Length: 499
Ligand SMILES: *Cc1c(COP(=O)(O)O)cnc(C)c1O
Image 1: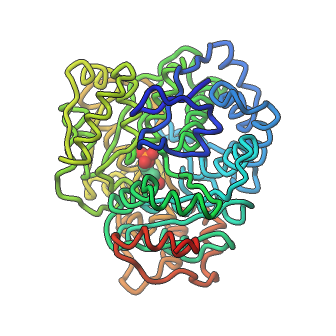
Image 2 (image 1 turned 60 degrees about the horizontal axis):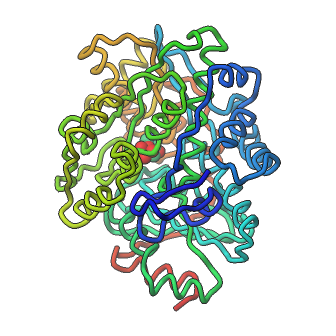
């Protein structure tokens, strides 16, 4: 299986190279040249397997240049009960009749990013070995909060790697910030940027493709890679849990093999929902893919009108990991929906970079709405939904998950579609304790710190406090201060001792 770049289809590399590079040198994203299929018999055969085994099976279809032994090493190292607090790795909770929560936050940082970032370092270091690269891999990450911590946990003290994380100074929750600035490890750097997530992401993208920086890196015996969801090694692990949860629901008799299952995903960078699309294209019987946004609803507007327009007010919300106006992974979807028209992708994404907007053709728009439904809700509706779930079902969810639930309720009202549905629950409520407590009518006073809030939420929800969050309390802060977005490049060079 080869991978092509969305901006130049003649670039073809194997998966190890795609993962090691992260992004193609001309700025395109790597996509598999065909989507492998999974038959009903294969799906059924996954029923008796654990999560790591299911993952190895799915990876064997995409990462064909990795040996079976290498894939087993990666999956068995990543998906363990040492890192995850449940043997199922991806837990499924029954919310109400025909509606299930796919809890993707049982990993070490309590958000769904762990599902991919626990395994990416293994994919990457295996790739470097396979390719005889003999270079230090420098991981640059732009984060809206959750990716940064998950990447730091995944890469800390991994030999042959160095990781640098940039987060927007005002864009993350107290707990997210605390998780990052207390990060341990010899090979980690964390840096706050005066700006929003898009500033961080654009800054990192620019550094990745800057010739002067790349030259300096080369001379220093280093190479960049990305842990953002532009890296195929981030995306492919996310396909697994859609395959696996379909099998688990069938195995437990909640659905029959062949039944359609709708999927709802709270979306920012379009990575998680794109993974659901891949699972569907492989042959998993998934129905409508429901794309849920907060008030930064650039994706809702895009799905409804075919016009992508980032020229709009940016709003910090109670679901900060979705406060994104440039959804990078949309590029992969559009590449597929245009029949791999790299010239068209170049045109649209140049327009996005230069004018902040592009409009897709009617044909692409039709394909988009056939597969996807887009909806959004604001912070007041998010909080009302948290309160409603708590009251009706005794289930406490975080703000991102609540956006998905609310959009799903709207979808059902609008369409009358009662197909069984899987809602991606992307973070533990403890990660956003202040907002969740507020939603439950227990708004803490201003002087209550994030740990006391966790305690308060524990009392209200009767849920266990994740061990990893409780442990932060005694850890010293290692990374203080912030830089301007124009200083990011210089910062990277300095930290790597290249200037
Ligand atoms: C990253 C994140 C999202 C958005 O996922 P994308 O793959 O960027 O669409 C949603 N919820 C939480 C909690 C996240 O951390």
